[in-house]
Image 1 (cartoon, rainbow, N blue to C red):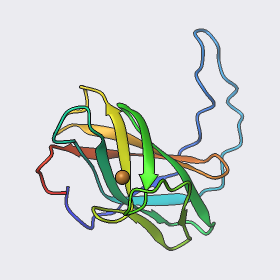
Image 2 (cartoon, rainbow, N blue to C red):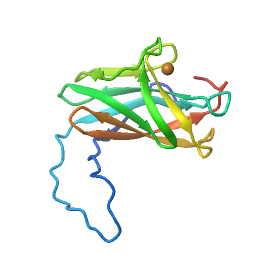
Image 3 (spheres, protein in one colour):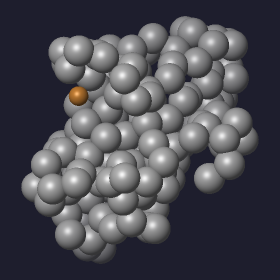
Image 4 (tube, rainbow, N blue to C red):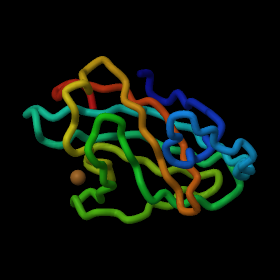
Length: 151
Ligand SMILES: [Cu+2]
């Protein structure tokens, strides 16, 4: 992935749980405010030793006008994911101010992805979901890289 390329996309509407077979969920949910985010440099570093956590790095920019507070990150194929400070303390929330961004990077705050499935392999993409305070979610793909590749 080229550095510094921002990928803009509209805010996804939070899915309201799993739709059961034959059940048609109501379509009339009001869309959330048209907040938008951009993502740059999203990559998931696989662990050198299988079973260890992977590390997710990206930068999320708030293109909207509302203050946003990131409260959870999830990674498809990971059992769980946690935002960490540079010293590995769990971060319950990370602010993303309007016009500003939050960066997750090596030796800085980062996301650890635990219990990665065998299906998460180098060269593939893993879908990342950001959840903000208030319930809005935003999804983007992260490039999966082998341990030892450029972080
Ligand atoms: Cu960590």
